[in-house]
Amino acid sequence: MSQDQAGQHDASEAARRLAQALDPVAIDALLADASTAGTPIDGVDGLLNQMTKAVLERSLATEMTHHLGYEHDDPAGVNSGNSRNGHSTKTVSTPNGPVDISVPRDRNGEFEPKIVPKRARRVGHIDELVLSCYARGMSTRDIESHLGEVYGISASRELISNITEVVTDEVELWRNRPVDEVYPIVYIDGIRLKIRDKGAVTIKVAHLVIGVDVEGRKHALGAWIAEAEGAKFWHSVLTQLRNRGLRDILIACCDGLCGLPEAITSVFPDTVVQTCVVHVIRAAMRFVSYQDRKQIAKSMRTIYTAPTVEAAEIAFKDLEATWGGQYPGVIDVWRRAWNEFVPFLDYPPELRRIVYTTNAIESINFQLRKITKARGHFPSDEAAMKLVYLGLRNISSRRGGESGTGTHGWKTALNSLVVLFPGRLKL
Image (cartoon, rainbow, N blue to C red; front, top):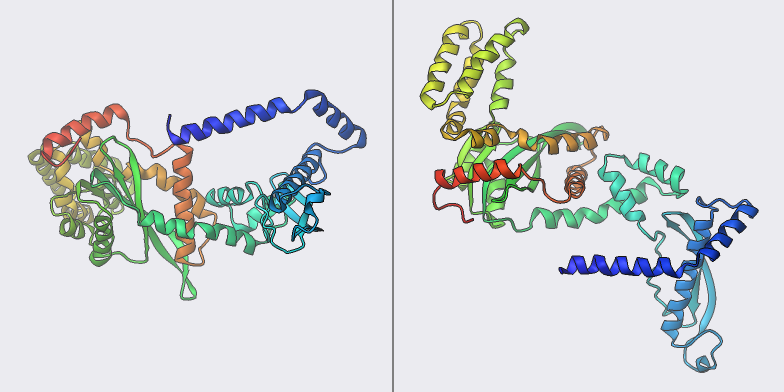
């Protein structure tokens, strides 16, 4: 049994013993008394809140006894050098609502409670609740309203912002953590964000690098925010990955970002750069009028479904002969992308399906767009990065870990990669 499993088992066993310790007769009596007094079960003045108050105060009293070394009114405390010194009151926020509690004091002022630490105003999972709402795209104003309406907790937007700041160090650790030495396939794509910079709101892109390991599982290797990308920017990104332990990428699938292919071959000279075919098609279609879209799409299909590079070249020449005069922009798009387009034509169908497009990570981008769109714009790059990280963490936890590409399909593709790139995969 692993350490995590052992911890879960101990927690389950403790919960079972606690449930057995609660006498059903006593619970029924509490519910009956609450009903007679008109006390609700939940809410600020509810039974659960009163029970939370009682448990917290009892825990604090026990902590004080342990701190002093003797029970209340025990003669052993006489001339002990320290003693109880009344109580102070404070209001703390809990998942059941705000609770007014009495905190015991000692005469020497040395008591440091653990269950409700000094200066702490939140107990339970309030911080986790705020982070969860924030990671789902709720603004600080929305979270403030939600906490007030549902839990009766008064939390300012500044406080909520401070709570979310706790992940700042976590973001840096995540961005600098070690990665695997080899990823058979790496996808690079980005989402556009509105970020305030130098007093004006500008469009920047959060570039995501997703690596697929030898088991077919996707890992977010990092995220970088930039207003404009180029060879220098991408060289810096890839160098960071190399410094974190990445030694080889077999296939890098991207959408023709400026300077990226050159940077990849500079840092990882043996990597095959595969442009996203879907992005090429979309870029070409921008030059086509509506009435000709179906016919040109059919002609382009013969290019990217061609069985060989030679067949694709013949299909491209047919496209140029038929439509080049009317739509030269379409031909220019294909010609510029050709060197990074053709590699996947040498691959078997099961591998083509995986590398011909960056849509393999489109579900991740879709979730991130959902949570960032509600923000309007971000006050800084750091605020945007914080939400992107929380969004990625939330997506991963919802799926029970890093998502996969499909077990059967990946195993077949992996066998093809072993043949195509001999000696570079250690399975």
